[in-house]
Amino acid sequence: VQDCHVLRYVSKEESGGKTAKLLVGGKNVSPFSKPESAHEIFKEAGVPRKQKVTTFNVTDDAIIKPGTPLYAAHFRPGQFVDVTAKTIGKGFQGVVKRWGFKGQPASHGQTKTHRRPGAISTNQAAKVYRGKKMPGKMGNIYRTSFGLKVWRINTKHDIIYVNGSVPGHTNCLVKVRDSKLPTYKNCNKNPPFPTFFADGDEELPEDLFDEEIFQFTDPSVTFS
Amino acid sequence: RFLSPEFIPPRGRTDPLKYYIERKDMIQRRKVFNIPEFYVGHVLAVTTADPYATDKSKRFVGICIQRGGKGLGATFVLRNVIEDQGVEICYELYSPRIQAIEVLKLEKRLDENLMYLRDALPEYSTFDVNMKPVPRVEHEEIPVNKLQVRMKPKPWSKRWERPKYNIKGIKFELPEHKMKAAQKWSQPWLEFDMLREYDTSKIEEKIRKELSEELEK
Image (cartoon, rainbow over all chains, first blue to last red; front, side, top):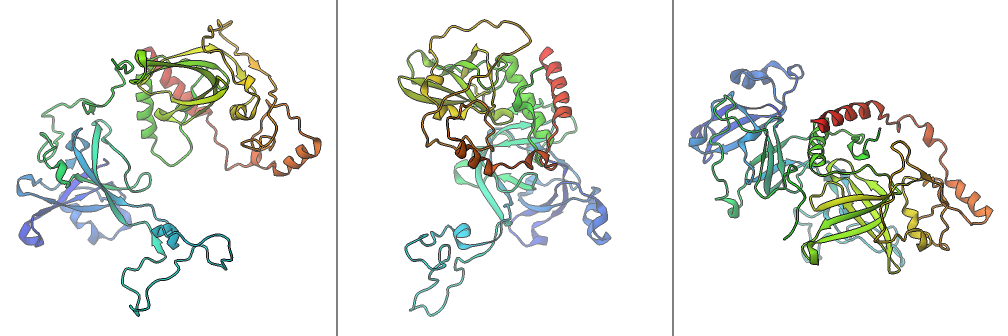
């Protein structure tokens, strides 16, 4: 988590959606590469220019004042989380890599046809359907992995340890939300609500672990 | 002084913060559980916890073939031949299931990767399961075993005569023309390639200082 700040509050009537929205900005970046008109949102909140701005749908009791920083301690170990990011861009890729088609055999008389899509439609249809799987640019789109458990949080360096794999390359920007899966709806026991404020109310230890995880200070595991 | 190879961060674009935190965890684990200094070619005995074994623990003796991985996922592969069946087990150094690592025999070999033992005669990989630990002679030198290993007849799992593997520990009994033909695949420009240089001396110094400070606490 690198310098996240709340930028603006958009109410339900203004935005036209079902719930109120909060605009949140990510990593700090130099203000010189964009024109002054783009800096207005950041000036209102009193915050340096951010690389990425996302929206989160928020209920009315979780509204936060624009300009508050958000930390990794907002999440607790044992929570379940959805992670969204842009996948690694693979460029223009053929049908075998992009959609997993089997292609054609390597020998037995195949002339110049080993990784081609083959037939694209039937005779009766007399057209190619919309959304037909064909070669094209692969990757560099937003994808989400759902239901990832948070095992450990480092409050000093603002790091969240999450189960399993997450889309994107190393050092890419990632959006972390509470899980929307129905099995994990009641799993969040006493998270800091609306968020964790670093003003000094509660002093958290540097590392927060889940109960089931192995601490390095314990001796080796033995079965009885 | 010895620095375990898994502490040295690999060359890449990841944040050094990640390696710093992994090192802190590794030091924590080392404080509780002693991981002895060992190289490829040592004979080790490892006891791991196993829920399905009687006595709930398993002991495996073998020669270390290779050490791989960096950070907390550092592994080492032990090989032994038990009842005419070659067995290789890959252990993670920082796994909480490992209960003890003992060094039975201290011996460096000429190479850093002893994978060719799979194609060597089985007598070179057999070690007695109940071997007594050989007492360490001096604090300074670790003896280098210049053993030339004899191989089974070809085909091998990898073409060990090719210069890419750079193996010095095999006694090749192949005819001369085959050895010459293998030199065709040599890439003598690789050692002068400047983009591949990764100078770790300064990084090692810093890590050594960090380690010694932390372990003394």
